[in-house]
Amino acid sequence: MLAGKKPLALFYDTIPECGVIPEREFAPHVNSGKLVMSERTFQSSEKGKPEITIPVRVVFYALPEEAGRIDQGFGLMEEVLFQPSRPNDDDDARLGRLLGYTEEEIKQHLA
Image (cartoon, rainbow, N blue to C red; front, side, top):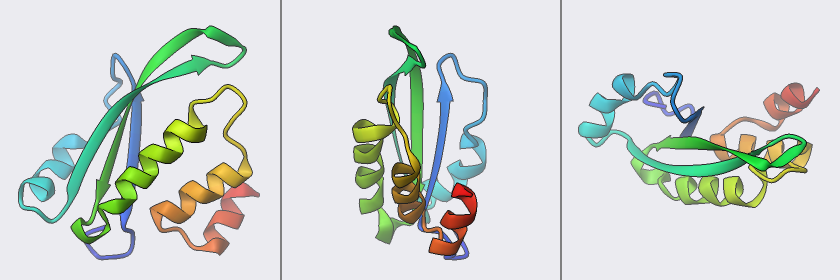
C-alpha cells in the first residue's frame, strides 16, 4: 500500500481475537496520516447453524485518497459476506476489485 500498488487492505478476526490483524505494524502509518483505518464488528452465522452467531471484527486500511473504498468494503460485507448463502465468485470478484487486484489476479484466485 505504501508503495502505491494497492489502495485498500482488509483484515478480519473472530472475537475473542486470534491476533491476525496486524495493528501494531500499521499503527505508525495510521498515526502519521499515510494510511487511514476503520473497523466494525459483524455477527456472522455459523454455516448450517443460523441460530449460532460469531462476532467478527473487520478492519480496513486505505490510502487517504482511497478512503471511500472503506465504506464500499463495509457495504459489501453487510450485503453479502456474512449472509448464510454467500459469498459466491461474483462477491469475491467484487471484493478483489475493491482491494485493487487485477482481473487476471482475480481470475487466478477464483480458479
